[in-house]
Image 1 (cartoon, rainbow, N blue to C red):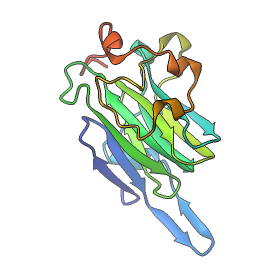
Image 2 (image 1 turned 45 degrees about the horizontal axis):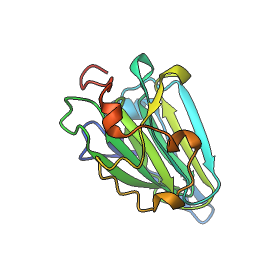
Image 3 (image 1 turned 180 degrees about the vertical axis):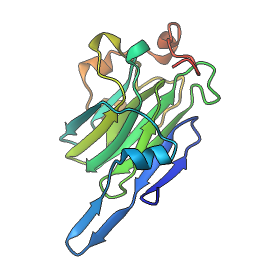
Image 4 (image 1 turned 90 degrees about the horizontal axis):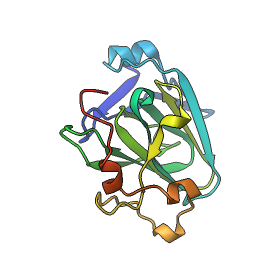
Length: 193
C-alpha cells in the first residue's frame, strides 16, 4: 500500500487516490492501478471495462450520468492529459450524504484518481483543451440502463464555474430532466446497490 495515498471525502464512500509518482529528468513513472494494492487498502472492486473520452476544447461539459439497476457502475476516474472539474452527486436515497455534491480537480499534473461508487451521478467540465479522460468500471455499459439529469439543476446548487450558455454540451445532456423530475422515480437506495 506504500504506492497509494488514499483520502476520504465528505461524500459517503467516495475516495481520492493518488499513486506514488517516480520522476527524474526524463519524465515520470507511476503505477496507476494494482489490484493487490487497492485490495490491501480496502478498495475491492472487480473492474471489467476501461473507457476513454477525448474532449478537444476547454468548456466541454458532460453529465450528469449514471447507469440504473443491475447495470449500476463503480468508477475509478483519472485524467491523463489536461484538467477537469469532476462533479459527482450522491443520489442514493437514505445515504448520509444524499443530494450532496462535490467537485474535484483531476489533472495530468496532480495524478489524482477518483473512486465513485454505484449510486452517484457523474459529470465533468474540461478546464483545458485536449482532455483525455479515462475510467475503469465494475460493470459493462448497458444503453437501456443509461440515465441522467440536468447539469443545470438549481435544486442542488452545483457550482460549475461556467455560464451554461457558454458550455459545450451534447443534445442529450441539454435535454436531461431536472433533479426534481429524476427524484420522482429515483431507483437508487443506500445499502441496496
